[in-house]
Length: 193
Length: 436
Image 1 (spheres, chains in turn orange, brown):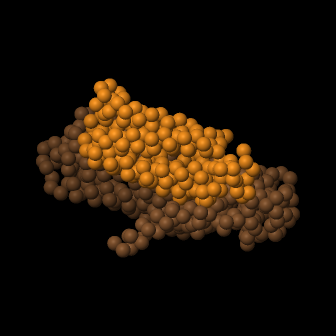
Image 2: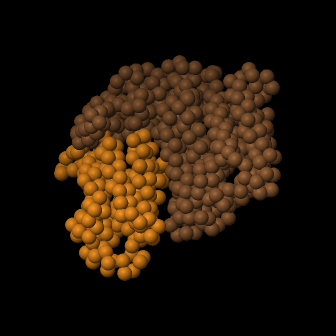
Image 3: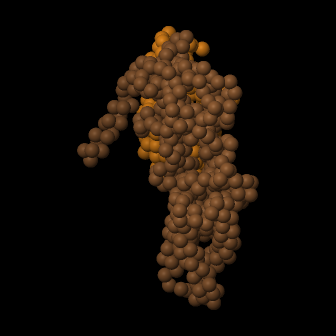
């Protein structure tokens, strides 16, 4: 009854694409213009929090290995905490901009979980390649929230952070469990579909 | 520092060299099906994987409940994704299938499942070779009880004993306790689930990371309880967070009720649900017993670590209110606990002759200490507070009672993981020795 892994990835890709577009819009128009409508401040943090909540069913319904379950659970929990901290900042319940460290931790943990839970090498199949690409993207991107906290108004950091989520969405949209990458598919990976 | 640097470098190397990591095969299909009952004796067990695998020692073995191996040597089926073994003539009973396959790049994937021939299949946790819960399971279950106590206690104190609006700092700390309790219940639940599966899988740690948990999540009571409770407590964490964010304490009521409801997962997957003489009443009694104990212990923790240091003006009201609540909780604890003890111990001498009975005796002794402590608070301290006195050392005394309550929860965790003494007539659903 559980959907294919790639179908779930596509659903989350849609969420991440929206998240990235919100952040990109904020980076382009600037924080001051973006904040003229208060509700806009809640858009990406509530989306991140909601995606974290939705990751829990994925965690407990995809249990074909211990690592998969723990990886999904770590994404769920860190996304809820990071999204929650950002919502707290937007609402004025939290004040220190260093709460952005929760986003850094979330990205670093998520990236490490991607890399650790993928046991196959880069070119084993398309999903293996994408898991490695996602893991490294997230780990490198973990620096951006720190840079944003340090210099909040630098366009490069804000746009870069937005582009990270758009990149993740594109990578997830490309995901198919058993499909070739660059025309190559390991004979061990099973029949392509 | 040097060691830390070594660990960090090793960790980075582990993720930086993914091609050295190993692929593992995922089981796609089995015959007979996982935990199925078959009425025609199968001639073979067939496993189909999502990729080609290699045969290694103990790749595919089938055991009867008495440990007798009933399978021949493994061989490949149509291609190297299919592994099969022929079976000897089976007799009525439960059977355990253990598999270990080598992916061609060196990694070993493993799993276990059961099937029943002319009988109901035993759950995978009762697979042949499983040794039952260990001290690690006891500690994990205790952690789950404590998490539940912190969650229910911090919410219960706030909703039942104290009245909104609360002082800001107290409110914040209670929110932190509730959030920590909810996430801890999820995280410790995951650890407890993996440990329980590990016992049945009988794997070393690294292989366990690639062990197939799906038979446990889908085919066992504790697996279904784990899935439900994880989702339930994620919902609780969401309600607690929204209540904090939106300044809407009313949202804590659904959080409290959902947490209370999903705490029943422990009762629905424990002795009260699987023992031969279990009934709806025993499950309700177990649920009330656990909920009352969690509220009692958690309420004390909330008073000692939140109300006392942060809201001196509320200490007296909190103590008196909790004292009234504790009276009801203790009554529930005693009534439900007595009923369950009578139900699970067929004879009085089981109290000292069976290991379950001895653990129960230890638990009862600790409960007596806790009840005496609570009675001192109720009958000696409470009247003084009502007269307006301020007894000294009350926080330390409450901390002592909370510590004893946590010890009660530990004894309860050991008790839940122990098997009650057998009853004269075993259930037909239990895996029985093979008979023709």
